[in-house]
Length: 261
Image 1 (cartoon, one colour):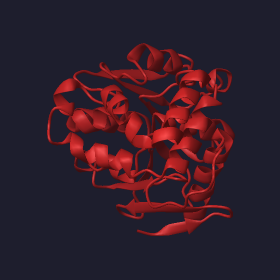
Image 2 (cartoon, helix red, strand yellow):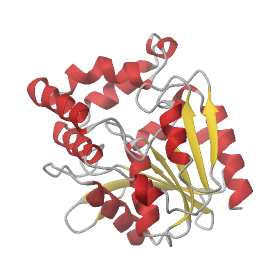
Image 3 (cartoon, rainbow, N blue to C red):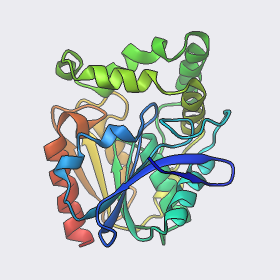
């Protein structure tokens, strides 16, 4: 996969689809790589120009020492889009990626034509919760967080299926410094005021069994944005595009066709 040198960081990315296609950017959750979107790809239009990337400290991107700030993660994404010449994209951000999406939409409205905030919020959990998780991770590695993370991410049926092994491995493959940096960025972020100023077409997506960002929390953030839409996916947790990829793809495609194409 190609990579982009962006000053202090090297980011791994994958850009697929026709060069003249609608640019659609996907931004990952904490502890996940760009491979997290693979279950969804077969359910998306073939004429989209799709960009997926690993944020700093994740996947095949460079690991820089923590702490990370949300402003830093937003700048990384901004730099990658500028590097690739991408403008007026549809930006799909899940969890931490959704927080990056909110920050980028405020900072660089020229880059984003429509916004999809999936399983995310203007503020996720509390600083104390993230500090406790970070302490455990420093003491025992990411393995000590694995069971609780998978329980928040997936429904019981999915956790008991062989498919969960892939996501267990992806989480454990995340560099500890990268996870800690991302967790610190989330802990220090509260976008309620700035997100409320957004006016671009926005879709919120939630899973009805999400243990990380419950539907009411997602809805609270989406309601800050005038004219926004909200979709609830049933029998799905924090990664509904994994458990219900066809339904997720249908919702996403319908929103894009209504507001962009």
